[in-house]
Each structure stands twice: as C-alpha cells, then as structure tokens.
Image (cartoon, rainbow, N blue to C red; front, side, top):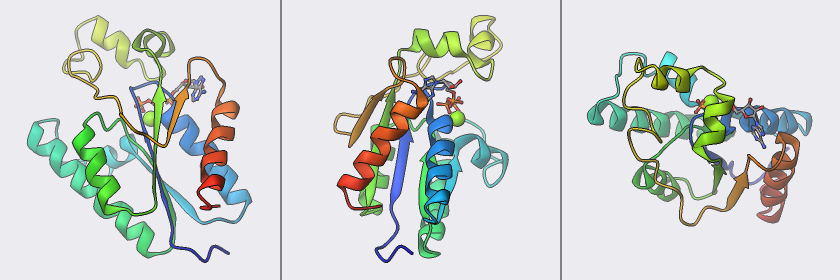
Length: 176
Ligand SMILES: Nc1ncnc2c1ncn2[C@@H]1O[C@H](COP(=O)(O)OP(=O)(O)OP(=O)(O)O)[C@@H](O)[C@H]1O
Ligand SMILES: [Mg+2]
C-alpha cells in the first residue's frame, strides 16, 4: 500500500513516439505491484470528457483544463496518474508541473521521420494525402521539453528498455 501522496507521470512527444505504449506498460507494472494507478490518454479524453471540443486554440485550452481536473480527481482518490498526451505546448506542461508537486515529465523523443514510418493510427498517411491538416510536428510546432526528468529515445530502444528507465526514475524519486 502506498503511503505517500500519489504522483503524476506525464508522457509527452509526437504522435507515434510511444506515449500510449509506455503508459500501458507502466500501468501493467504498477498493477502487478499493487500500486493504484490510472491512465489519462489523449485519445480517450477526446472521445469522452472532451468529445464536444475541436482543435481551436480555445478548445485546446479547455481540453487541457479538463485533463488537469481529471488528473486532480484521480489524485484525490489516491491514484497515481499516467498522462499520455502529445502536449506540444511548454506552457501547458509547465502549468501541470506547477499544479502537481509530485511530477515526472518524460519526453518520448523520436524523429518525426520514424513516427511517420510507424504511423500506428494512419494519421501521417492522411497528412501526406492532405486529408489531415494542422498536424502537430508537421504543420504546427511541438515545443521540445527543455528540462524533463527523463528523455527516452524511443527510436533507439525497445519499449521494455524504455519502461526500465521509467521505473528507475520513479525509484530514484522514491515514488515507488
Ligand atoms: N521504445 C519504445 N517506446 C514506445 N513505443 C515504441 C518504442 N519502440 C517502438 N515503439 C513503437 O512505436 C509505436 C508508438 O505508438 P503509440 O500509439 O504508443 O504512440 P503515441 O505516442 O501514443 O501516439 P499518439 O500521440 O498518436 O497517440 C508503437 O507501435 C510501439 O510499438
Ligand atoms: Mg497515444
């Protein structure tokens, strides 16, 4: 049983960089250890609490506020939260860092060329054929984290190697 206040692991990176893959692996690991946790995934949020929102600046702001509220509500219930969301804005990530005292920012660093090749959801194909506009990393900027707690080069390591590094940082921080 975890006695300390719950923590937030914030996975950021381009689409296809590995956030959801690693969030699920971390979740499974924590479950096995009986450490209560929950995933707040960008896609899931868009399909549920933010299904009414689009991608205007205003709506993106609203979406992030809702994500923060959802994270807070899980923390209040004693659950550690794994956030897997592109979160291209440094300001948005800084706001989260300020709000959540036990916070680890993990940058899934992967060249866009590799993300394009992976294309797990077919988004990059749609970018190429012009049916997807305003795509982060192609048409709009992804602001790379300057001082994340961890950088994972997901193009050079497999998911299990990346997970090992996440576990190490959580142990080093005495979060697990
Ligand atoms: N070290 C690694 N960590 C995570 N994923 C990896 C790694 N190496 C290869 N991959 C592969 O990269 C792909 C990443 O897809 P994933 O859906 O996790 O990306 P994502 O960052 O969640 O994208 P999106 O923002 O569109 O949701 C998967 O097919 C995964 O198997
Ligand atoms: Mg994802």
